[in-house]
Length: 292
Image 1 (cartoon, rainbow, N blue to C red):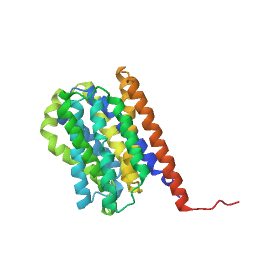
Image 2: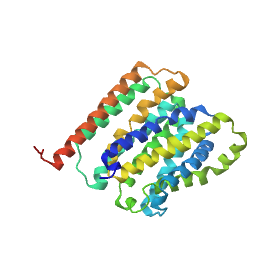
Image 3: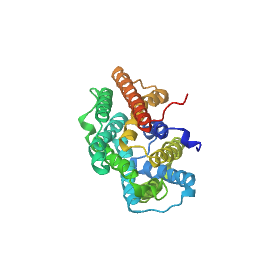
Image 4: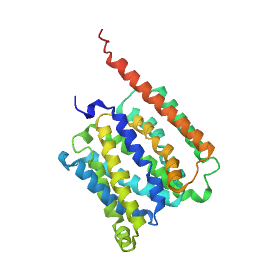
């Protein structure tokens, strides 16, 4: 048994979501536009992911090319949404993605629909709505639409990572080429921004590229390559929006509302319950008798 095989792949998803959760604060912390920031952090993310997965080569096929396009879209859309609406609105609306997975994953991969998946997603979405009681403002409509589009791309990206052909090449090919696409698309804005970067912009860009985007996707694509169901990954990733207000509080002293604390508690309980039920179900399927 290899060292990595000792750990559930869901733990890698959880670790990735933990790193993703720091993104909202650092995106808001700098003065760069969404397109400028997308360019600069993707430069660092591309280098990090390519370095960690270099031994797997840099081949690409049709499935990973499609996934790369979706990755580039979701990254640009989410950063732009966070800049144009509240970070809370952006992350909440992006995390409508499990609802799309709930509909399309059984159809695409011919899997049995599980009632507990629906219950868990509905509970999580119910908990998420408590974060935003009275806070979804009409003036944020552009950012909200961008965030919803990012969530749709996120769901489609999840689905493609599970495709058998995605495992024939570097597990992180979609991230590598996706970041390359982001760099090419946003280069005019990003290059122009280089001359005006201050130390806050520079430090936030390096962190976002190396840690929040680069290392997180190394962990996430590793988990998906080990067979994590798209919906399970989407549910576990709810750690990201739950922890977002924690980092905001630690960074700038903004206190989450009581509604947000209640919503976060509901989501954490739902996610842990889902993980435990899933693990129990797999043990029953394996049906290994205890040895006395």
